[in-house]
Length: 169
Image 1: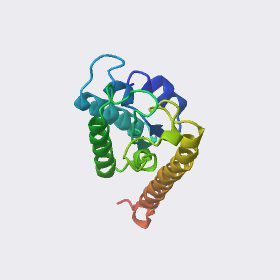
Image 2: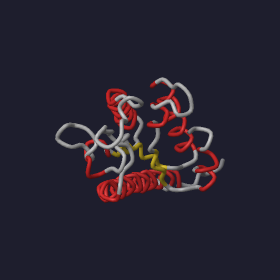
Image 3: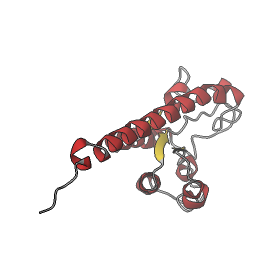
């Protein structure tokens, strides 16, 4: 996931990036991966984005369910929760926006709502109907944060002390 970040995000110069990543790593789709390695990749992507003036929204992984097709054998629900907890904490400590899809997609059994998926892993149209407004709100929050940071920087740059002319002797 990290290899694609420069061409797929940084080169495009967006104002905000929503990072929803890690579920395929948990499943081992590209080989075995530890939580720490996924966290390192998410940290690197967040740092690269911030360094390039891109606001970051870290999106939680979605819950999974075995209603339609077995999913929990490849993606441990406990690992999903652990990674989401780490992302929420990392976002709070680093001034990023955390987007909680996980809680919004749970059913009463604390797994991915069967009505929001076609396979127990990926959202269907009903799932995207829930996710869309959450993403829009998080992006707006990130942009407001960027606007507030710009205003603060502008105030520092144009403060009365910095605009005074210095007299010579």
